[in-house]
Length: 470
Ligand SMILES: Nc1ncnc2c1ncn2[C@@H]1O[C@H](COP(=O)(O)OP(=O)(O)OP(=O)(O)O)[C@@H](O)[C@H]1O
Image 1 (cartoon, rainbow, N blue to C red):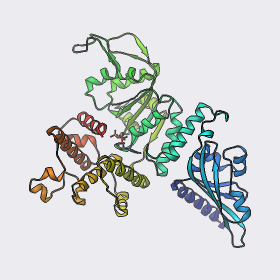
Image 2: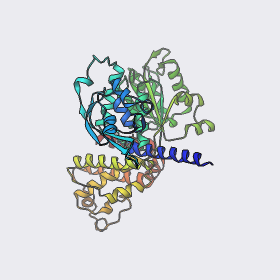
Image 3: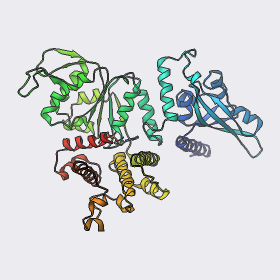
Image 4: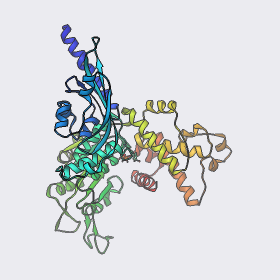
């Protein structure tokens, strides 16, 4: 490799590394040359202007100001005066910021680059809501999205570059009406993302129905999904029943654990997707329905199609837009942000005041989290509960493996802070035990159900019920 080639390779590596580093920065940040041509940037900078990162990287700051993407750039002033310049600006999306441009000088004192960062301050409602600027409804939805991304960190935690990409993709997907296939390990946030897509879609004012295909015993799945006419079969309700497809009319249907759908029903689902019609059991009449399907699985569907356990044609139909949610262990920035969010949530819920020190966060970042976000959430909840009863850090261990003096002495109720009615105590114990078995099984539902001696359908129902109670 020649010197020039090596140098080129080194430079591209540097830019790549720098871009990755910039992505981790929570606020807008970009670098221009002395003429204001944007060289490196994070996607947040592009987002606050309402353009894609690709477009932003092909732009010049002056052009962006002329095209009204924002009203003031300090980059060229900083280059000209050879000193940092700072001041307010407003983007066309109505986001107000304090921007700061710092020139980078070479050995001869000449400006070679300018680094600009921005700190969002708020929304200028006059601009953001103005119709005079010709905002289309799509543009308004983008504004809503950007607001939530820039200011609202409570919705879906996505601090890692990987998850930010997923979220940006989800936002784009939300503007379409295609079927979506979400894949990812159990507890990685598939349902959270499905809800996000629904909330940001044109169907957001209609129903979001989540159905776990593994949560019904096989004979019941068909009648739950398709419904039935009166008298369709023995034991059917006299007045018939509307199925979940119909109930999701105009809204979004989230089919979780799609891999568990029996083969016969896979064909029926495909027919519904292709014809846009659903036929209740015992009926010859098709009813037109209009819903958006989001399916999810932690299985490898492609592999299942090769084994003949999942229909190929349905797989192709579902995976029009596939989205892979990364495992928690691959996004350490999210571990910290999620831990902070859950800690704040549970401190509020239990009126506690627990803090996480840097050491604990470092340990968290290195853990493998087989149960993903759900496991982290449960762990933080346990930590908060333990703090209320002045129990030591080892309370963080799985409840099943803790063998303390209190337990040996039989003071288990005190140890776990159990009080209230019998029903409340039983429900708390049930939750704690299920959490600990799940954790011991690395979040694998089937294995945990086996150990607990219950059907996985029952376990799913219980987990969802726990989540809804909170
Ligand atoms: N990015 C996120 N931000 C905030 N909370 C999250 C995020 N991802 C997951 N969670 C929380 O983690 C828990 C598990 O998430 P979710 O149910 O969406 O996972 P899942 O992949 O659908 O799991 P399963 O495959 O077992 O159905 C929920 O309590 C959810 O609120």
